[in-house]
Length: 382
Image 1: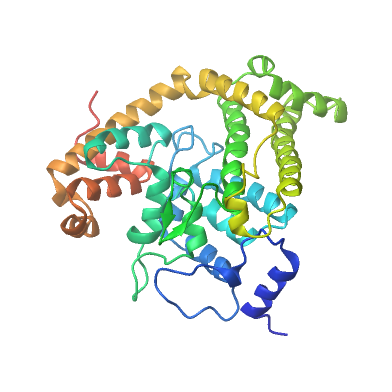
Image 2: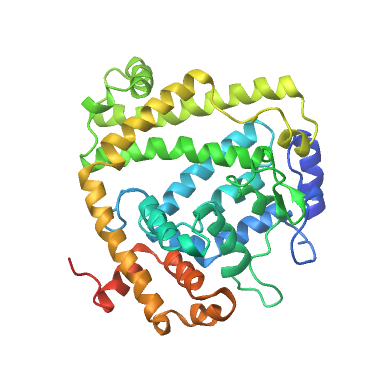
C-alpha cells in the first residue's frame, strides 16, 4: 500500500493536538513548488537540511573544545543531533509536530561561526558598522540565500514555519513578522521546544566533555545542587557502579530531569490556557514551554558554575582566544584581498557588499579550513 503526502496530513490531523503546527496548514514557501507526492512539507524540509553543505560543515565546527584536538568532544554537529533527539521526545510527548521540531533543531546552528561563541562575538565586533552578526539570523540567511543548489530558486525554500522557528531573538520584538505573518510575541510550540532543547542539551554534554578533558572534576561538580540532585538518584539506583558509569548516568539524568520538568510545566500551561491553534500558543499570556521556578534556579546556578569552571577556564579560553585572533586576521585579510575569497563569495560582493560577503565566507568556514587559510596567507604569527 502506497503512503501518500495526504495520508501523512490526515494522520497529523488525527494524532496531533489542535495547537500543533500541521503540514496541511503551512503558510507555504517563498517560491511556489508542487507538493511532494509522499512526504509532508516538513519532512521534505528536513531532508533538504540534511543534504545541505552548511549542515555537513557543522561536523568540523567547535562546540566548546576546538575541533580536532580529541575524537570524543562534541562538535556543532553532534550537539545538533543530541539536541534534536531531545526536541523530538518533547514534541512526541506533547503531541506537537515532530517533523517541524526536528527541522528547527537541525537548522538552528547552520549559520554558526567557527570557534564557538567567541568566534561569533568577534565577527559581530568586526561587523559592528555593517549590520552586525548573529548566528540565528545567519542560519536563516544560510537557508534563504547562501545555500542555493536548486535551479529555479535561491536558497533551500523551506516552509515558513521552519524559517520562523529560527528567529527566537526576533519574535519578542513588537509587531515582528516574517513575510507579513506575525512570529510572536511567543513562537510556535515546536519552536519553543527546539529552543529549550538547545539549552538543556548543551549543559549536560559540556559537563561530559569537561570531565573527558580533565578540566571539570567531580569535586567541583559536587558543589552544585543540580549535579548532586541527579547524582543522588543514580547512586540509589546503581550503588555498585564504578565512578565513570555513575558520572555518565548522572549526565543522562540531568537531561531526563529537565525533560520531565518541561513536560510537567507545559501540561500545566496547556491545561490553563487551552490553546486551540498555533496562533493561540503564540499569543498566550506566557511561554508554554519553560522550566519550573525551582528547576530554573538550579539551572541558573549551574550555568554560572559552568562559565567559571569550564567556558572561562584558562585552558579553554587560551586555546579558543588564539584561534579566534587568527580568524580575526583572516577576516581583515579578505577585506584587503577579496580576490582570495571563493568564487561565489567574490561574485556576491556585487550584490551584498564587501563586508557582508567576507562575513558570510568566514562564518561558513570550518575550524580546520579557517586555520588552513591562515597558514596559507601567513597569519599564524604570535
